[in-house]
Length: 193
Image (cartoon, rainbow, N blue to C red):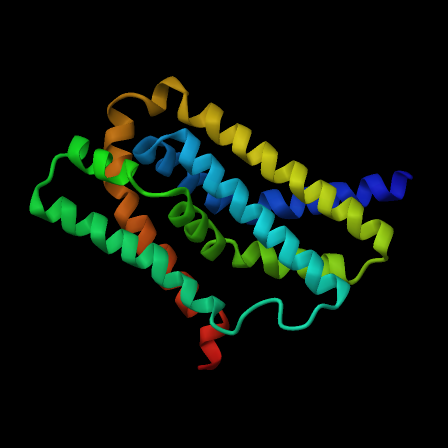
């Protein structure tokens, strides 16, 4: 029993450590599009990544599509649109209203594209374990995703994130998205193409 708890804790730690970048993006998205959509998109993305890693561990073939590396186009495109809005001189409030219309689906796709490192760690961890340990690992990963969502909520409501600093950080979101998209495209299955 204790070994299952330790294995769950290792999956928890792996999930947390590979999602620190997602946590920063989540807090930024919460400031722009609101906490409900951002948290829902993040949690749906984590469920997808954990489920695909689990299915891969069970031996299901072709779980990860060969075009998955092109998911980097999503944050790249969102970043370019945000950057164009900034250069056009649209006010932050107007951009926030437009961004608030972004669906949970778009947010989920963004976080799925940013979670390839989580998948790369979690899939071998689950694949190299026995079935009872796999369930413990999935439980640890799910607990970590929920913890990250709660931390993002707390972080977005912190006094430092509701003042002028938040508005300055909001201006950096397009650049972060562009960098994330380039990173995903350059460090994924698209490398072989």
